Image (tube, rainbow over all chains, first blue to last red; front, side, top):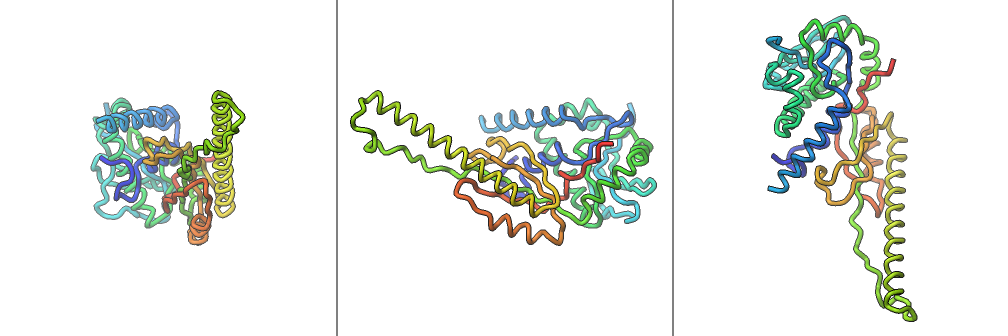
Length: 57
Length: 255
């Protein structure tokens, strides 16, 4: 999988900026609430470590 | 555990009717459908708890391949619907137990969703990044060193000058990024700043000093991109992406 500089119109990193930190956040007891700051931090950490792993290979 | 869950992509006006293109497939390869409640319509898919329960999501979001596929599927749905009608996209991985819970959310947030839709209707988002322009490694010419200085003092003077020059470049870069953001904000209806992307992820070797999104009326898109293209600086390179569905501006007002 390529992350950046691909033929794809959208770099994944630009998309994740928007999908993990943008968009409407709805909270309330009826949701399985995942849309929080923690999620963003967890995911970006995962992303960075995954990329680091890919680069190391 | 429930047999199925409901993944929510976006919310739009019910008045537009069913705007789901036939055969549209979303996250987890699931078909896309609409739930209408009052003035609002939700764009959703029925998904498998095996992949979209809270526990499963916590695990899957750490999996880059899954995250990438799901983000692209979410975006494809939002983008396809946006071609037909304005929608306020939800953040990735917004999942409800069932349709009734989605309806309850639409009812409880009707005014807020309507406000969000009003803000983004007829507008698109443009992404602009500023990356430090690679600086020539202009080491100070040693022949310019003060000949009256001993080697130790000359070395220190050299280091001091290099440090001063780096600070000056840094300041020029910051000033250029601030000027770019000011210029583009003036040409846009709203702006949103994201943290600069890690060089490891952005694919740029140099540091990113601006990672911004601008909300621009569709009728003003040409004027805005002209401003971006006309703006130049020897200190930073500019990268334009878009037009995007206005993810960065689909927010519910704090009540």
